[in-house]
Length: 516
Image: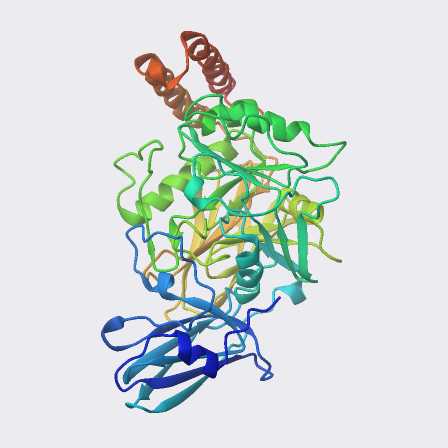
């Protein structure tokens, strides 16, 4: 599918005229010189951004306190031209995480014409290594998404098409629930979009229910806190057949108030630790209406560490929970696939294969570096091998086990590729993972693997106590805010559900931890 920009003759009739207007022509090609999809920024005098008429832009995303460059970007295939005032311009081209970002400067004189060719080259080819990328949280129209996944070279994108209480973001999909309707769009052998996906985002938090077989009952009429999210998660799970992994439930962020409730009773299949508040040009470092972080998690790094710590608590409690990633492109100022998760499998694509690979591993999330992690027996010990690559300088590699950094390697300045080996006693830990960071910029750029599970026992009493306290706080909130629910009967039912979750964490505390 291509969006062809109008030719100059038709263009000139429609675009605004500038005094002493000039023409800027931009071509986007791959390393072989062939036209390629790309996302561009054209910045002129005073930082003003320009776009050709008809180019695809993300017009619904909000600024959310970060820098505005993404909102001025646009997507094209091959080439475009635009009328601009004279001046000095900076043209930026991108083609997703696996390609080098390219910047060129060009001066345009009054009534003049200038041409710029951006050659976008991959710095790594994940497809050749058997890896498939995905962004699990996207709010773009299906038509826009098909172009955007090609511009960002993202392999898999479930589009959220059912999202109650967010009417201004509704997307037109047609009747995707008819038995004969095709809800999977195969753009080509490496790019796929699916449409039967829902987000339940209300007072207690947000859950993504992906690859549904039928619509969720009473979903559109739900209130802010009632019916509970568990109702819709159970509906989604009831659509699974046999040993299928679909539909899939993703916990959109770990700091939402009701995440411990869901995890105790109907555990999510994955959890986003690279979430939509990490954007290309900044971070919205807040917990929104979720549970505020402790004072010890200060600043941007503290916000990220808070998210990671909550995820680590669940792993310590025995949950087998892969890490996931999403952008909320279309709502947050984020290109599709900026935060992405890579899974590994061979052969042709299918949604079931992608999610099964996420469940079984290996996988990792990233918004910049690529991180490969293997753990193999070495006598009575385990050898952990880590390999990190990035188009920007790496900062450090860390090995995390049961929530603690047990080893790390500083990386010499200017280093883009790094390998290291670590020796680990498998009897000391119940899980292990690797993470790496780039040197700081507008946002935090990192990669984090899903855990590898080890035979060691971990005393999870402190982790369980953390969520015991959380649940007690949540129960107190309900007692103090009965108007969250339609009547005292619904309030009582929710208190019973919370008591069930509280008992789960209390039992974990008393046991010192057994496998989930």
